[in-house]
Amino acid sequence: MLQNRTTRRKERYISIQTKLVLVFFVTTAIIFAVNMYMYINFNRMIKRIDGIYVSNANFNELQNGLNQVQVNMTEYLSTKSSDSMEEYFRSEERYSAMVRDLNDAVVEDESMIMEKNIKGMSESYLELAGSIIEAKRGRNVERYKVLYEQASQLYSCINTYIYSLNNRQFQNNSKSYSALFSSMKYMEVINMAILCMVALLNVLLTIVLTRGITRPLKQLAEAANQVAEGNLEIEPAETESWDEVGVVTRAFNQMVLSLQGYIRRLKESMESESAMKEKELLMEAHLKDAQLKYLQAQINPHFLFNTLNAGAQLAMMEEAEKTYRYIQNVADFFRYNIKESRESVTLRQEIEIVDNYIYILNVRFSGEIHFRKHVDEDLTDVLVPGMILQPIVENSINYGIRNIDWEGYIDLSVYREGDHICISIRDNGIGMSSEKIQKIMNSRLKETDLEQSSNGIGLDNVIGRLRLFFGMEEVMEITSAGENMGTEVAIFIPYEEKENFYV
Image (cartoon, rainbow, N blue to C red; front, side, top):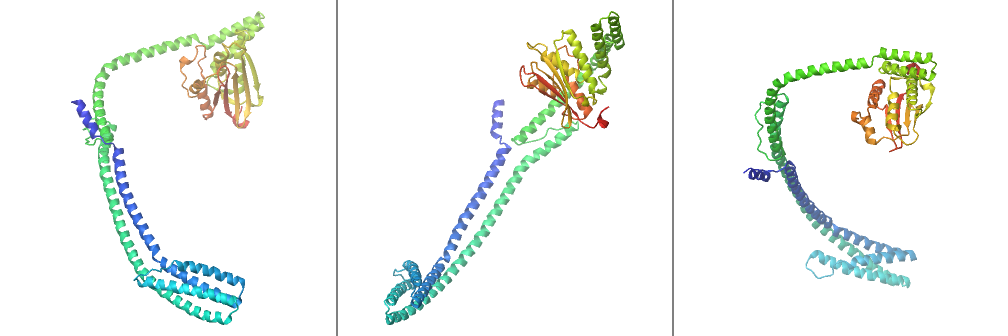
């Protein structure tokens, strides 16, 4: 039963995209068909209009050709130059070609009869013209004068015939042009009417389609606003559509019902959980208080410093200079660690505490840590947050060079780079993966990724304090060329004039 209902729903489902594509396809097809019909008809009429006055143009060209033959012949008779004779033969050849295209069939149409007469007279005229040229070249003056008179009369007669036939053709063509122009205007009106009907149909289809989409969307929006205001006791939004809007509306109704049930269950469980929550909070508060007191007892600054000072004095009394120096460095290190971790200090003080830290470790590990410094002393009076270099050096030792099979070293460099002071701490240890670098820079490194030998001040802590202190995001850059290629941590501090930023 449920499967049959689901199948029927799938059969009735028509997506909004399908509806829009269907409407667009139908209207586009109609507009395309109308435009194609208009295009074909207009092209056909334009071709007919273009061909209306072709005959007049041909007769004008024929008349011009005849005039050119007469002019060139007359000029040759006057000058008898080779250039004029050459011009005559060229014009005679062009006119002969045009005469050959004229009608010579026996027909009943008056215009075609006139055209046939023009062709016959033109052929006679061309023969006379050729005889005149021969007589002139043979210096037969009497003959070419007589022939020239006959040719001139025939030339006038042909001109008259061409002019009359051209006027007749022009009148007929003008009537045809007026009829075609009227038909084109009528077709333009019909095409505009069809386009208006198509546009109206498109608007109607769009209104019908959008109404079926927007109406349930408005109902759904109203119900969603009530839920957003905290009113879950609403009537389910009604919908009869089977497109995406219908699916979303039904899902929304189901979500509201689920929220109503969840809130009822939540209210029932809150009272029973409140008492347990109060007990847990009380126990947690007592536990944190005990842990705090335990840590305070473990790391009592006065007790620690008094103990270290007593050890240093004892070593001095016993003339154990190395032991005295070691204990003194340990005391200075812990005093700085506890006192300056939240205060601003100079970069020189930070470098000095790194020296103390390296000295302590080298005493502990018999000088295994090779530490080199390249420091521009003119830049060491800049103010920085306390305890930013020692955690980085500690990480370089613990995670970089502690367990390598080759001689490890750490380089500390301080130099100016453009508008910034750069503090670089570089080691030749195992390197760092790009994934871990990204975690550190984005403060996503978990405690399980660190070893227990860390002092608790991680790189994310250093990055956060540097960003707060200097008010900028780009304060640190971590680079590593790859496995066993070492790691470099670079800190960038804005460079300003000493009276503004230095002690």
